[in-house]
Length: 183
Image (tube, rainbow, N blue to C red; front, side, top):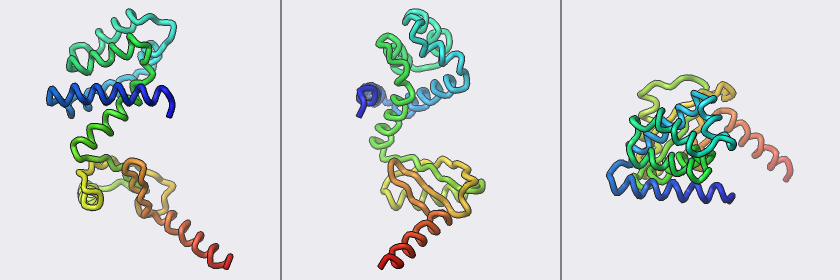
């Protein structure tokens, strides 16, 4: 595990503990996601914030202009701390770790569902209920179109992949046939 990963996890854990004390776990998560979204949508702004030649004071001023009135104190102070310590590049990793920590604490998990066609809300609800029963956690579903799938779905929850796609079934069938031919 890289040093940056360890540091991002520590920041995420500390932020989670503060959010938990203030009963703002979900609100902080949404604010963090909004900050990342703003950065991704405005690449020039992101480049300025991450630019090594721009001083912490200038970056702090930029963050104040854009985010100060939009974020809670603990989220905003976390951004400022990242800038002060020269760790701006850890923001996305911090957000990902925060989401994981918060989800675990709240008994939730995010499932990314890959399908070749758009799913209805009813389908997504059914998938959520099915995987909630399987994992024992409340599942939040994010749908991703993957035209490379022939049919069926793939569901990723954390580091586990549930492959119910037609292409996945064909690959498993091919492996089985190759193993029986080898005998």
